[in-house]
Image (cartoon, rainbow, N blue to C red; front, side, top):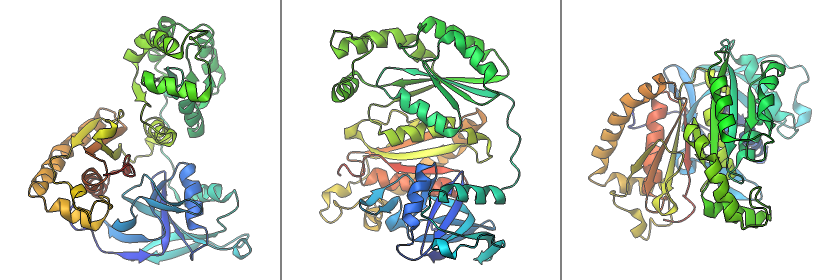
Length: 438
């Protein structure tokens, strides 16, 4: 597919999410539980494709799903209203799920298939409300999936360190949810013993100034030993945060900084920063959580360190729009400034809209400089992506910024996501500051 006009297809009254790259189409009448089940799947690691209305289309003999432009990235949550969600621009469908009351679900059903746009897919019936519904969908997908390739011999080991209050515990909890055995504040001289006793399971170890025998030099020596072991794939993760934000977090939670004792919190933070500086310089992954919500931080951890990295989906690309007023996304690998495009904010009819609305899209596209800029951008990006992938990068973050993060950057980010999805690349799309104004 090209970044031009999308292929035409079939509109379904259905919700779609992607789990490990496989699209699940949730069908049922209003009130049947589509959005509720989608929300639980997203909490379990799925990514939204479309809520309530889903477009199906064919590409290279496969059936794909995407959201109509007017509702892209929006999920209806009963009791909360419409909530913005990161989304996949499109996903290949793997399973059709008809949501029905529990009494209508057969205990031992025969295998069922359904054909849409000439493509035959497995189909099941499911009661969406029991707690087991998410697990049942995982089993249904696994039953349809081809045999998984053998796992690489090297065992994953992640050492997680950083400043107190920056989010190290969130990182460890996320890694545990991803399938790692997570151990916090394990004495450094016991890390090797834990590797021998954990039975080959991926291991995440949290280390900070509270660790019994902590010293930056000792941790770096351990890191070098683990890196030299060919049986292990070891990475050092450092979680950082600005002093001002850390002070606010400690003040709001009324927690005492481990190095502050009877001194001001800021003294403890600055002392810890000096102690941790050698580790920050050696980190394979550096996360600055100053501007990140917890959910966004968890997504970044999962994108970089998911155990599903060998599924054959290729390098994951995350695209986010943002407002320069709110600061650069610290996790961005590449940043694009689109403030040179004419600004819909100054049109009273367009100001309350966003870059996902057709009227704003038309306004930005009619800027004489847009077409040449966008074609040049994708011509520049195209050859870079396989080079990043060849270097072993599994997760690339592209950030597109404008003044308010609501109009121009959102539209360009959406177009970039469509282009990458058209190349068959896995894409996650988010809009960091879309609700903060124009």
